[in-house]
Image (cartoon, rainbow, N blue to C red; front, side):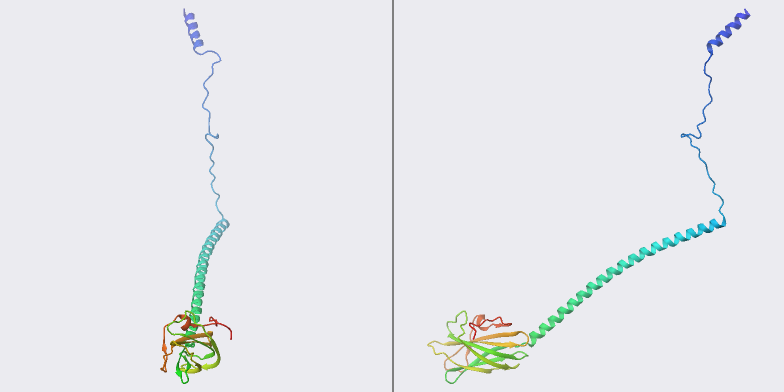
Length: 250
């Protein structure tokens, strides 16, 4: 019976733990792999005096470079500001120069206007049914008279354009301030109606070159002094710089 019991136990052990079964293996160490890499901490070597001096010199060099970069930037900003200021100053100077030139030109032009000749005319009836042509100079410079153009028309029917019939070459220097300066005497045209005489002076102005001035008056029978009458600008206008063209070249 005892032997049977021993064999029974051995059989049960054989069934429970069969031959060739794997035994439990210990857990694998993962250190040093991709999952758990090794980390090696390297302690810095102790610096020598030369290393510390070299590091200090390097820090000082970098500080100087930083200061140089900052100074260069500030200098660039200052240069840009100086350029803008100089450009603005140049522009302002140019404007002032132009204003000065314009003012000088305007002053010179205004002075010429103030000192130019200012010619007008008139006259009176003389003996023998003749008309004395007078010239006035209200300006500040001399008027150098060259030609006198005149004509007659019906005082009640004045043509729109004066028809100058006769030119007279007359060289005379009409001084500033001259009044009723007699320059020519012409015969009055005989007609059944009341006549008007129209005259145009051609003269030189020292500032404006060749100029002209005209007038027209009504001749009253039996009266010494004529009467001014209203007429178109073609009779009484003033021209300058050879803008007036005579009816024909004398």
